[in-house]
Image 1: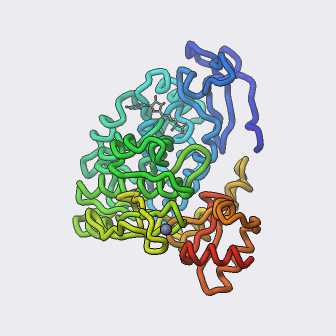
Image 2 (image 1 turned 30 degrees about the vertical axis):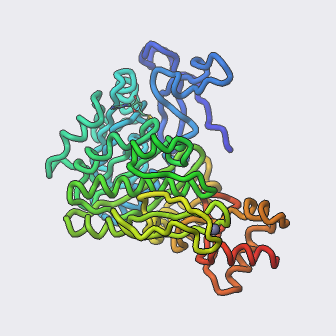
Length: 413
Ligand SMILES: C[S@@+](CC[C@H](N)C(=O)[O-])C[C@H]1O[C@@H](n2cnc3c(N)ncnc32)[C@H](O)[C@@H]1O
Ligand SMILES: [Zn+2]
């Protein structure tokens, strides 16, 4: 990974006094004053971003780069001026990047409950000379969103990037999103979403998680379904356009479609995933609220466990992903190669079914040698199945072949 360039502090005459150590950094096409993280780390185990008086996490640069690409792809598709809201903005880095790096961004509303964050964001707006288009508020995110729920006040894009779960803000975000608007959600609460703390997942997302080898995909699908249900309450449907799971967080991007019929159609993408911990069998069962869930594994007769309700439909709009790839190829982000690889893998998995097989885990159980991923993909394809890699796990294979077929194929390699 390329280390972000550290720029020495502006001279003290130019830099406002925020009451805590700050420094200037560069990310994308902006220069931003951020808390000097080293100053807030007392122990090696301290997580600096949450110790600082204003939140700033350099490790989320890729998250912000992808958000810039998704917003640019969305704007190209829409072909109109866009109105953006970042209700949990921290020092303003993400929203200022939208204003400077995406075409036709007419207005950006940045907000943070922390007055120190709002002050720093205001400074950064001036520093980047975007005061005409970017405004900063210092209020509760739900209040800000609710005051934009009236028809002419709604946004074309809302980016919810909280600590932990976006669930507390989903409802008011849906109300503040115009018809055809895009919403992006970050969730960092992977312990609940991946089934380590299932009760918390049920509380936040109204869904049961499962600690399977493909739990990160289940996490994305649980988040997407939770958004779909929040939107449906307001007679709004959603179409998933992009999603990714990276490092310690997941992201979902969806476009709203107003109307009760659209909301009903959206809910047809909800269902459950049934998993057998004995033989790797898994199946997707469509249906919400009810679905015909088997209580025994059809392959080995063992008991099965169920995750959901979750999104069983497509997570990725392949053409949208291609637009993002075109945009990425024209820019030079610090993590350019990583981003290109991530996007091209996601494009390949767009048409593949839910869940994936983690080959190392299967080989471990079979006591078989672990083949290169490409070999198992090729072997499955040669048997007439659809198969490919997944960005969720470098050792994962997505395929329409059953677990039994994948096991047979592995044994024959
Ligand atoms: C993860 S940080 C945001 C990081 C930022 N989006 C970025 O990309 O750099 C979450 C922010 O939400 C703010 N926050 C927490 N609860 C809030 C609330 N109820 N209303 C508004 N802001 C809130 C915190 O002060 C924090 O700055
Ligand atoms: Zn089984």
